[in-house]
Image 1 (cartoon, rainbow, N blue to C red):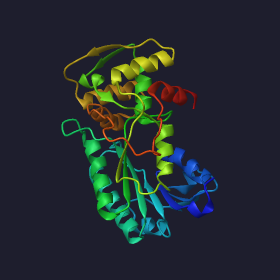
Image 2 (cartoon, rainbow, N blue to C red):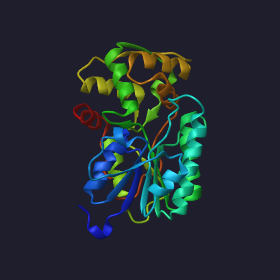
Image 3 (cartoon, rainbow, N blue to C red):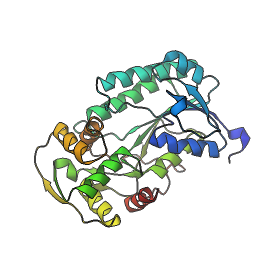
Length: 300
């Protein structure tokens, strides 16, 4: 546990999500005073030591109340486009509301989890929206840290669940060109460890890129996952064109990932996500490689 003088008063959004749910006990274990903003406290299964505030990030009054006397805020929410409608507009409104309230509450540090940049030719609508949210928050809070993570490998990460289910259930796959796109998958352990460290890190950079120890294509990840899981590697037939909409339909049919959620995930697969500016020492030191991250996910 950190010394009490270093303990922070923290507001955590997204505590009922996968990464936020992993981060919350890490923050509590470090001795921080953590308050969680959740839409339905009655359904939120959170540790007793965490204070719970009812509210939505788009509700200005609830956000202002939740941010009172807060040193550090974590913004770990995004719509992913799974609920239909204009998800980018919803995320834009939520970010502006939260950012305005954080500025007015004089929050010293706001930590936002987004995705690695995919480049101008590969960025999907989802990744562009995540970047826009980061810009909106940074315009309002001077102490904002934009954490950009590659594909997260963890037991309940949507991207990992999608890949795992495809390999487990399909001996033959028809895939577009993104099957050979390179990425730098990062273990959820390393994402959580870095996010927790940022609560007390002195002078962190405004942007921080997180990746694992390995750079792999999706084809290589599928083959390596199959070997670790004791399954035969799927036979992959690459086709020149297969739209994200069509891809999301068959992903939705054979995996537990809803087609509406699969669409932004599949769109993002066309973007090469690599760490180009390694984080400073003390943040994401010695990240796990892909194989160890998969083993950890399978035993979680």
